[in-house]
Image 1 (cartoon, rainbow over the protein chains, first blue to last red):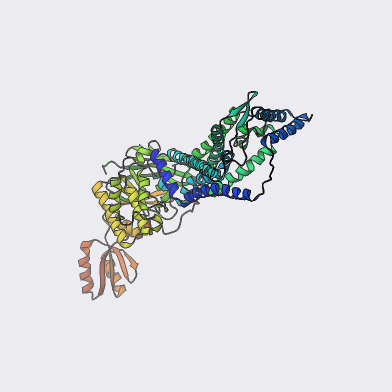
Image 2: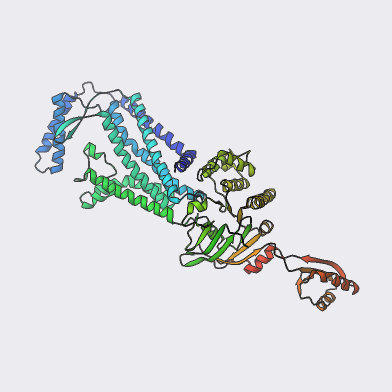
Length: 315
Length: 307
């Protein structure tokens, strides 16, 4: 199996597209930060910016008026109370929030750039089986003393490794960009857990956001891999995966009133809501999300393996 | 033949949809023997070969390699088989060497030395580190042969192997196949449209038509002797030959007839005595092409089927 994965890895990196994607990723990540920094520097800064304490006080006033609204529903009320508690805690303990233009916040935000990784890994995943068919190499590959499921497994593992690599590259590039273009701002992240406000470890938060975003990468990758291996067409797999990446959350939004929204895959592809508190489907929990994701992934992989091992090769 | 066959096809049948593409095919292939596989287009050659290498599942029947079926012991059985299916499609964006390394890793225990050895055997050592996209078709065929030989297979399946080779390459290839068949006892199964190639290369041919095996024969079987007579005047020749008890067949300006060799001098003497002008009396051997067309009833593609 190790040899098979080495083979797939070798083939992957002999394709120019792989190198282009990887280099593009680094260039885009660092370039975008640079452009943003430059754009920022052209704005005139107002001389007397309000202090963070003034900002918090203003925010509290706003939250309080919101809470006073008699038509407010339960979950919104909870959310507002939570924010109010955090804000109060900051003022009480004199804990400054992070500067949105600071280095730390920039690294945190970079986890959302894994969307770019989704795009690139989906391209690789869609082609890793389909390309063997379009090149005609599939008949050379399968007429070997290796069972088909082993070959498919090696391809799946290789795409996941590629996804891990690109994620690490994203993290490192974002760190480099943040250190190049932004100043350290200090500040503390606060969270509301079990009825009380707590300080959150900064690196723990960075890691958690990356890990949760990575779940989305794996889901879309697996989807593209399945479509690519079932229909043996990489363009279909890329198109469909990217389409769903953008349309999926819209579907969830439209169906959010209905019970069925809980069982849609795209409700669970962005789990960062559990941390940031922005889940738009109420009443779903961690174990539920994991269960739904697991079921979908097993279905995708089952279809992929079944089709790859049972069907005749006529390419 | 009392030898144990290396490969056995047992009642191999394949349906595609409701259509029977391969119908109850039985065939045994023996060590050291080169078997040619002939058939008109659409007769089921490629489907048969794909079933022999596990690319296509038979609807019923079995492919057995040294006692192990492809279905139950795929890895064991396939480790004895070397394959080139149609044009050997390689990874064009990698060098020939990397391609061989890739396929070597899919078998157990193929060393770098073995790869080097095979590269030399097929005469590719000068360009093996160049990308396959820069190779000519002939070189790709050589590389294809190299990957098929890497693991020293006992059974070699070749589909259209000489396609794209130049005449020197074809001869070299032929010599090489005979050599590994004779010296290493490899059983070789070659499908080709080039009948003259098959004729020169094979010990035995199997002919398939409409999914059925219609003939298996040894190539060195004693041919019935035919002779070709060309002499003038034609009418007189015809009379004379008929009186000698020959059944004639018109062939160009002369006649063709089945006749035993020892009768020929007598006939010639009689012709000379009758003052007939003789231009040619020569043994006539039917080419494989003639035999093939005879067996398959001409060139029509019988009952086409969609792939």
